[in-house]
Structure formats: C-alpha cells, structure tokens
Length: 585
Image 1 (cartoon, rainbow, N blue to C red):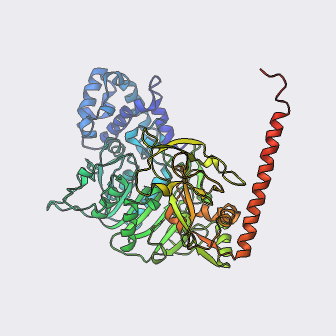
Image 2 (cartoon, rainbow, N blue to C red; image 1 turned 135 degrees about the horizontal axis):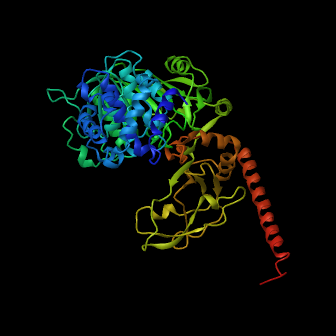
Image 3 (cartoon, rainbow, N blue to C red; image 1 turned 90 degrees about the horizontal axis):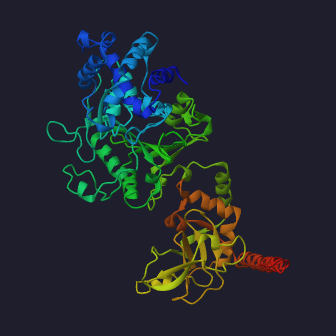
C-alpha cells in the first residue's frame, strides 16, 4: 500500500458507520477545500483551518459556500452531501487539518477512485499503472493540449495536468473527475458535461474542435439509437450502427488532427458488421500504427478483454506493430489484481520497431481484406503456432472452401410454428466414432428459402464454432429431411462436401481432430469470454492435400475408432446390467 493510499485510509477512519462509497464524496470535497485554502481564491474566514473553532452549523454553512468553487457539478444526486453525512464534517475537518501537517499537502489522489473498495458505475477506474502507461503513450511527443472524452475517474486527466498539459475533458459523469482534479494545487481545466457522440465540442465557427492528441477508454455498455446519429451535422458516422465503440472511434477520428490512443474491447479487432467496416477504412487509410493486447485484471469493474489502439490521422503507416504484454511486464497488485510492471522497458518495447517474442511488425498489405482481422494472436505467434507454421510450410495445402461448403446453423428460436426436429448439440459430438443422436427437441419452419439445406445429411462434418471451439463429429446416418430430421444447434456449423471437391469428409474429420488440426483452429479462435471461430476464417483454413491412399488410411482409422467405440458402448450396457437385479425398488 502506498503512502497516498494510507492517507485515504486515515481519512476514512472518521466514518466508522459508513462505506467508502458513501463517505468518499464528503472526503474529496473537504480535501479539495484544504487545497483551495492554500491559494488566494478563498476569503480568509472560509479557509479550512479557520473552521476549527466554529460550531457544526457554521462549518456546514461555510462548506456549502465553498462547494460551488470546488465543482460546478455538485448538484448530482449521487454525490449530494446530505445532513446525515454532514454530521461527520467536524471530525473530518479536524482530521484533514491534522494530516495537512503530515503529508496531505503532497497527497497524490489521482487514483482515489481505484483505491475505493466500492467503485460506483459512474466512477469506474483502471489500475494506476495502466493510467500511467496510457498517458505516457499519448504524451510522448509533449503536446500542448490533449482531448479526454469519456473521462470517468480523473486518473488520466490528473496525470496529464501534472505534466502541465492543457486538458479538454468531456464526460457525461464529470463530478468524479472534477473532485480528483480539485486536489491539485492551482488552476485545473473546465470539465464539460455532455456526451461527445451526441453533442461534441465545437469551435466558434461551428466546426468540430481539433486536437493534436486524444486519449480515451471506451466501454461497451452504452448503445445509441440510429436516430441519434442519422442526422449528424458533422457527418462523422458512415457506419449505421448502434455500437458505441464504433461511433466513439469515429468521433475521435473527427476531432483529432494527430495521434489517438484509445482502449477498446477486443471485439472491435475481429467482429463482423460495422466493426469490420471501420477496420477496413482505417487499414485503407493506413491510420493504424500499433495494437497492444492488455492483460486481464486492469479494470476495477470489468472482465472484458481489452486492447490499446494507437492511430494517427496525419502520419500514415505502412505497417502495424502488434504487441502482447507478457507476464514479464505484469505484477500482482495489493488486492490480488493486476498491475503493469517495468513501464520504461514496456514503453520501449512498444515504440521500437524490432520484432521479438512480444512484438511484431506486419505490413498493412498482409492483413487479409475479407476479415480485416486485427487480433494479435493472428500475427504474434506463440511457440506452438510457430512450429505449426513451419510444418504447414513444408506441406502442400488447399483451402477448406475448395472442397467443403460451410453451412452455418440457421438462427431460429423455438416457437409454436414449424415441424418437430432434433438439434445436434456440442455435447452430442463424441470424442471418437460417429454422431449417433440429436439431443434437443425443436421446431423448424419448412416454408423459408433453403430450409432443406439446413438438415443434416450423411457424411456431414459438424464443428463447434462457439464455446467448445474446434470440437468435431461426423454423421454417417441421419433421418430424412423434414419432420423428425436433424439440424445443427446454434453453436455448430456443417462442413458439407462439394460435388466438385476431392476430399473425403472422414479424412477431414480425422485431420481437424488431430493435434495439428486443433492447433490451427485454436489460432483462428477469437474472443476470451466466449471463444468463437468465425465462418469466414474457417473457409480460408489451410488443410493438407491428401492423395487417395492417405485419405483412405484416415477413413480406415476413423472406422476402426467407431468399431471400438461400439464395443465400449456394448460393454457399458452389459456392465450396467450385472447387478441391476439386486435390491430393486
């Protein structure tokens, strides 16, 4: 625990009957009062030391007089200091004045929202080391001004102000930022209460204000309606989407003439739809300079996997540096959370252009245009993937879509309409042998286009695309299509042999289940909370070319496995009957 955290704990000792979340508003306003008292902005009779000999009522009255000077946003109901809380004010004033003589004058309260054990939704915070890392990335070229939209905790703004950088801050929840900045001696920037997407900062001419550097942390919680953006006077949003991540990045691009450092959920790096359209545009304009994969545990209220994008709207780059922060640069924090370590070395590894085990430069032209995938694992290979690439480089390969059609499971919900069918689930795919059953009852509408193509056919290979990614099975016998037929569950896809293909489905099944096949599928998997294999990536999968003899050997091995599996099932049934007649109910 740092000395700054210890000072906060000593202040909180006044509130034995309140939680930190309840006490924090009054604590920060009182310490800001002390900071103001060191300047000439307060009349002498309103300075904090002069309150020591006043009655509790006089202290409360003076406190209310000082509040507007601390923050113009103190009308927020979640931060209102009511009469119940004000009864602690006399003891708190006494404590603050005492601690002023013991280090509070030098108190660095930048991370007070992170230290609080009960952060509120309005004040989500990040690990202090991450805040320092982001600010260092953004201010490397010592800009005079920085744009901080969606600042919530004050951690970024306070660090920028300590570097004497002018901050322009926009936030829909600005009070926490205001109170953190109020701990700094001297003037601090005005904080604008607004949503940057809906009502962005404008210059006097009515155009969007331009900044040399922007720094922001984006969270996926909020969604916008299409009505919010369709009439945007600044034409910032070519993608018509509800995604606040896409819209927020577009806003940053519109208001930045220079560098953008933005933390985004990893989904932006690989998701289809509007996210892909945004990536394609950034790649085409060569605005992406760096992608940095962050370790888990750096955010106080979120388990979402995140990355840092470094963009530049002025200086195009023909290559993208992919960096994965490894265990060497992480440490366990005081609450068993994650902190970044060795920041100077980490910053050098990010800025250097040499390839190493944690960073690689990839030409923009090498990024596949169909997916525009920016997930780090696609380019920065671990040891197993490097071995896989070396092995594949020595073999003749062919693409999956040359031989197999990828049929995605039809997206439907069980309803009162349609015929009864059975869905094959991931659990129905056996470790060995053939798929023998479909475990889930469902209804299926036969009247829609291509309805028949969704039914499982003989020699279809099934692969799990979500959750148990890479689990595979093959169907050797299936009911007729229509009522009573089998369809793939929502997490599965069908690999169906093309008439023009020359690849035995059984051979494909054996290869995909092999260590080499599983390593390939693992490399294509995206997402962390719910691993997902995208259909477009599966179509491009390189599979080894096999001659007739090799395919025959693979199919023979599969049939032998199925035979052994049948014997195992027969033995299990026999085993279950041995003592079943004893002590029957």
